[in-house]
Length: 256
Image 1 (cartoon, rainbow, N blue to C red):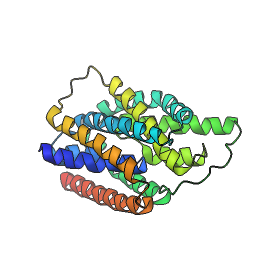
Image 2 (image 1 turned 120 degrees about the vertical axis):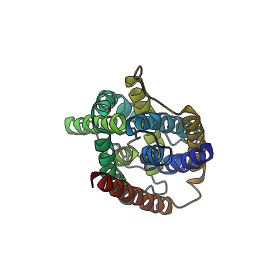
Image 3 (image 1 turned 180 degrees about the vertical axis):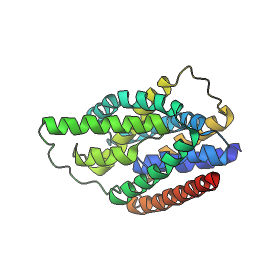
Image 4 (image 1 turned 180 degrees about the horizontal axis):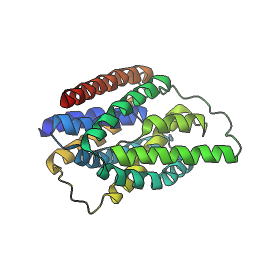
């Protein structure tokens, strides 16, 4: 079982490190369907796995000059209320609702990956001047990202990367690295919001999962400049759609 956790962690971490999004949304389905965790503990365990991988990815991308710290802190700090609220809501809803929400989330993440696949580095346009409308977009988006992270235990990179590229006008490689900083902040806040809750976690699985996620994220950050990001994103998109179909089918069978 630990070997399986390592393999799953490598895949998820690789997606995070190479694309800044997509891989983390696979962690909860992996914990539920591969390791038999209940949905809510799985979302808590996912925050540990994703947070650890994102922290390692931030260090790797930072060394390559691909993390915009002010932009990452802006989205991360504005996302704190949403992350805390999402953690509270997650504990209050039915487990089957959590899994059903995952179907929609996986499909949205697949669409985002398809439309906003990381491209090669290009010079970024000059940043937009500050404006109330832009500020409201940033606050609103950060809140939604935090809410998704806290509620479903995912990084939310499929929302963060497009926002960093389109609103903050960052080059895509920098948006990928900066997304990991936002994911790290939101994951830490969501975990703190769940502190003290009686959640049954399989630490043997989670530690192997998290360690593999770190290794995968470092590998993804290293290889992203050598492999076409479009090919990586297409492959991950297909995986997300396949997992969404699997969860949807399982949910229908439960209802029947």
